[in-house]
Length: 444
Image (cartoon, rainbow, N blue to C red; front, side, top):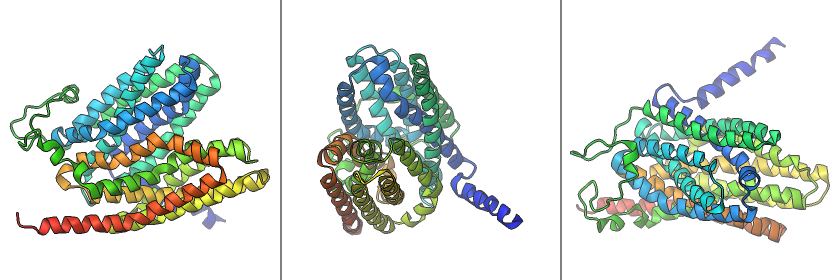
């Protein structure tokens, strides 16, 4: 009995040791991920009700504005990544969080659709660029040997914070009060300022060209003069030397990002499928989302070890494709076969999907870091995030069209898409590495 009582202690300590970043910059990055996810959990959980009921924007117009906002975020991510390479990711990310705080506050002042759309576009630009900026900052702070592990730890902490934020927003929603929802948005704004405080405590080399005077964060995003690059190139060289012209890297980024369609699958497609096409109770929606979040929290760091090389990451991405495809096939079996059967099938599908999600996330870090040009991490991380932005823009429409519109056939199409994307990863990565080797072997 006593032996059994002692078992959870070492297991918990081992998990904490694996999940909590080491003291120093890595731990502060983990704290940043935790704080940011707390705000995101609050925002995503309460925003739909706030926009439609409190502000009074029709649901269809909310969807339209968010799609346009997603496109704005997609377009602006790479230029902001270039700013990070020029001024340092910490400075640009600080400016990002300051502006985000102002934008979440502005949501509380919105009274019409035009104002809502403008703020939504600004928030999308800031949110889409933040992930690339944090990846670039992680690379600067912890180096190549630890960046994958720290990224996995940050994602585990992100899921923990997201659960906390969703719980806080749930309390506000249960109160059924406009004041409570306004408080949630102001809390999200305040969380951005906490993130700024965490960033200001980080010591990281700032990549500023020699002779360039130090500049305040609020000045950086106002810098639209692209007539001269930090390395002295003319403005005409911007496109010629853009990471977007590294087409093989872009192809890998798009394949990896497209596999992140599991996100709208979980948050849009699966909930709609459960309530319209299965006998499972609606409570299964929150139960399955919680299960997925907890699994990522528990196992992301362990799974990430297989992605330390681009080749290993490519194999993991192929595995992710197979698992995500298999989960779609399982979900397709859950249509109107009784409450217990459908619930059990949905549970099994989410377990498989979570495994695919763990592999995909780990592979994404391994590929985005390992295949990027070392001296241009900010821009390359921004390019890699384009695939993620593309699925954020098209994912909700795709899920409603396939899962709600085509039912079982839609699940089969999604399964085939996931599997094909996974199978593409190893040859794309091999082709990129061979092309880089040929370029490096050429005489300078």
